[in-house]
Image (cartoon, rainbow, N blue to C red; front, side):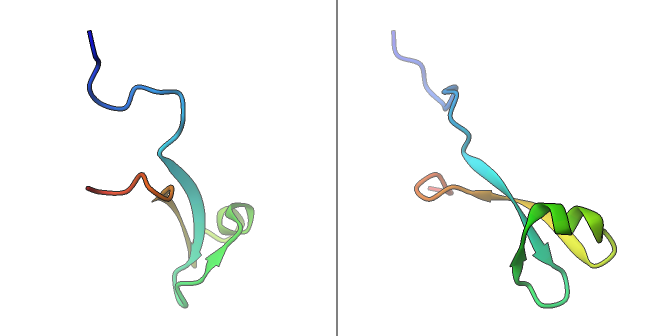
Length: 51
């Protein structure tokens, strides 16, 4: 019996920090230190995005 979906242990996304003003990626630790000007987002890993 084959299971459909992605129940594997591998994550399909990773957390990335982004500066809200410039849009540049920054380390997640820095983004969490400055919540008023940054966002922590989930970004799909290569090959795991929308199909």
